[in-house]
Structures are given as structure tokens and as C-alpha cells.
Image (tube, rainbow, N blue to C red; front, top):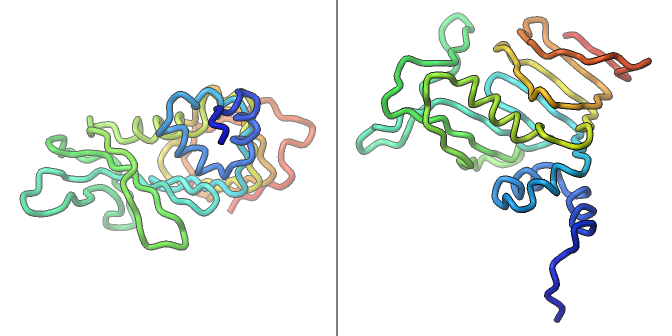
Length: 194
């Protein structure tokens, strides 16, 4: 049996045709392939950025602040929806709090924590860090068929992000500092504002 590792070019080809979520998982778990993963185009059918979650195709990445000093109780979420349809991002409880990033397939009820980050009082910095890991430092533009933004908090995308979008949908109440770069002759095949 031949146990030779893949050559650089072969590995690029294999990674290019992988599911984007598998690519992100491998890149997070195997730092030695991270530069190869970012060297080939990332193609996503549906990308949704919502209130404290990112959905890539059929996988949901959810992040929240959890209280972790509970004796005899599992950690519980302390940020999220509040009264009068208000969304609470940061909380004043810095002691024994963590940001948990969970991953769940849409057709599954099982969810598991893929990252724990100590909460330092700025929840949006953790969101930016996740977006930077997923979409930053790429040699090619990320290709997205359908890109929906429904997040009410300001969106800080990686400064080096290059993205090609077929359809962009925004909700009316999106607060964003997302800048659209120099427009091409036809930057979007379809633009929807809901």
C-alpha cells in the first residue's frame, strides 16, 4: 500500500471541491493546511449572517455568552433576546463568562461546542474573529450564490475580504458598516432589500 502524502497541488485540488464547512473544520483543526485551504476559491451556495449566528449552506454557527461558574448546573446563555424585541449583545457579568461557538447541522437537533473563548467584555470582537477566520486572508474572492444579512448589530467583515455575490438580500433594519467596493458593470445579478 502506498502511504505517500498528497502533493501541494493535489491537496489544493482536493480541498477546492470539499464542502465549505468541512474545509473550515479541517482548517481549524489542522493549522498546517490552513494556507492551502485559503489558497483555493471558497464556494458557498447560501450564506446568512444573523443576530449572533452565521449559516453556511446547511450548517449553523451560533455564538453566545455563557455563565460558567454555576455549581452543579451546566453553563447557561446570558445574552440574546430581551423585552420589546431588543437584542442584548454584551452583558455586565465578566466574571466566569465564556463565549461559546456552537455548530449544528440544520436537519439535526444535535449541537456541539467547537470553540470556547474567555469573555472580555466585547462580544462583537469575538464575532469579528470568527468572520476573520472563516473569510479573511483568502487569495481568491469568496463566491456566494445567495448572501442574506439580517443582523441588527453592526457588521465588521474582514478588511481584506473579496467576495463575489449573485444575490444580496438585506432586511430594513440592518445596521452595517459593510462597504461595497468599487462596483463592477453589474455587481449583483439580483439585489433585494426586504
